[in-house]
Length: 292
Length: 346
Ligand code: SF4
Ligand code: SF4
Image (cartoon, rainbow over all chains, first blue to last red; front, side, top):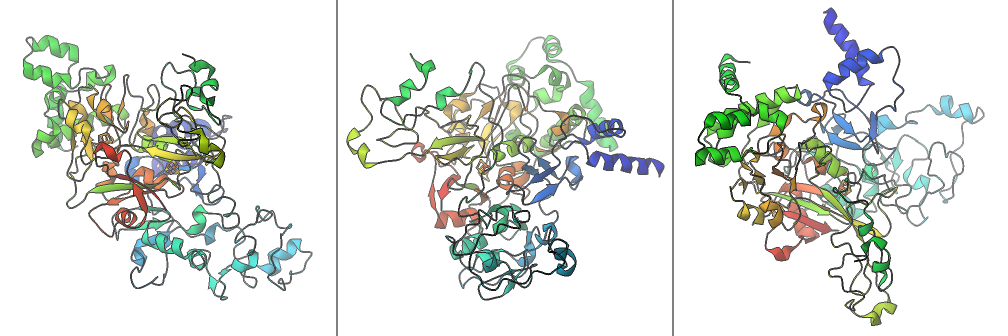
């Protein structure tokens, strides 16, 4: 009983410690760690899935006990998820999805398609306007905007950090074309129908029909889990890969790449392959080393 | 451990000897013994002591009876569990019925982040350093361009310019002398404006030249289309590496470096079990996962969903839908290898 509870304490301490280290190593480290955290750079324990700063993942201890290490492995150099143990962890059913057309009703049964819900990750979800907004807004609830004319929003860059870069639909679309002016907890389509943050595909698909169709068929976007048709899969939603605010600037926001492979023995650098020959005959001059 | 298994283990343990001893005690080496021993001729020192007599003499995996397979797997599980100080399982799952695995990769989407490379290393127990082994290589290709001014420049075949195949660029404006794309690119961020990326790994050819040349027939095509290797029978002659037109195979001249805490204990005999020194290895479409219904590690990790995997015999599978609807090509289709790895654009 006692040993069990001690083990539990050590284990939870280990949960905040090193990431990729195995369980065996955790124990010894956790014991040493108890008085003071080591000064070395803390290993990455939280990482992102596709979009940096969007879907954060925390390490989940031993969801798949056979592996003996965490459910996900984060890259120590870029902070991206590098490996999935349990693909369905923290997911919920995708919810109802209408048929697309007679030929393709989408792919899979609703209960076999799961998603990672967005709502629990939203910082400002379900805030009480009378309680929270007024804290900054001078004790007054801010009135709803009167029209939908696009304009840049300089305030609230703390909340929407790319609000000054906002660019979608060649500038013809702005916040309130997708966000609900009267209910900040939902999105809204052009017919005024409320859409949950957990189902952005219903909004995006209104304009991006081909992508939406292909996504329903499984030939656009990302899925993890079981490969067989009809098997259980976690579907990535539109906004898990694309930032709807800036998608026009970058389809995918550029990421830091994982480290390059090491050079073969004896090769000093990779200059031989970074030769550019913008004009005729240029390729010989660009590498002084390559004079034979 | 069940008693029955234990006694089997002890039997094996009793015969654990080093290779040197083995040769001494064996005295006159018959041809058969030589052939069997050849499979581990350059096994690493540490593993050498642990390699059992029985492992020396085991048959080519394909020729083993089910009983022999079970024994071989039990031997390995024991050896690995000791070596890596945790419970390691070695799976022997055969190919699934009515399944032919295929892969599709959207090169228009790939951003060159190399996450697939490192996911693969973690999943498949590759050597982490000295020698660093990676089964996937992402090549950076420069985008070519063409302007009216280039019209009169002609095909680059002047003495100044004749350097063979061009990558990126076009007949008028060559992008560089890199014949196979750039392997070691390391910009701050990817994707870069003037480049696209081209991941290469084993294509699981339907007519695999690597299989044709293997003198000991230790690499072969399984019925689900995966070209596998029985590492124990690999003599390290590297004929297959020369035969493969896609540079898909890797060879470790030294001892593999796989930290015990990073070792993936769910392994398959023909897949990601730890390799010894001096054998050839390559991508197996993660058969330890995919034969159990799970996507490969590279599919799951790709942040942009460029990678798709599935059953080519099932019209409802994602790969088949891609073949039906997208613009698809295969690398070096002229080599007559019939790869089951398809590249496509939207
Ligand atoms: S890509 Fe190379 S290693 Fe893979 S099956 Fe084809 S020839 Fe063999
Ligand atoms: S993980 Fe995906 S985007 Fe990144 S290099 Fe591999 S295929 Fe390309």
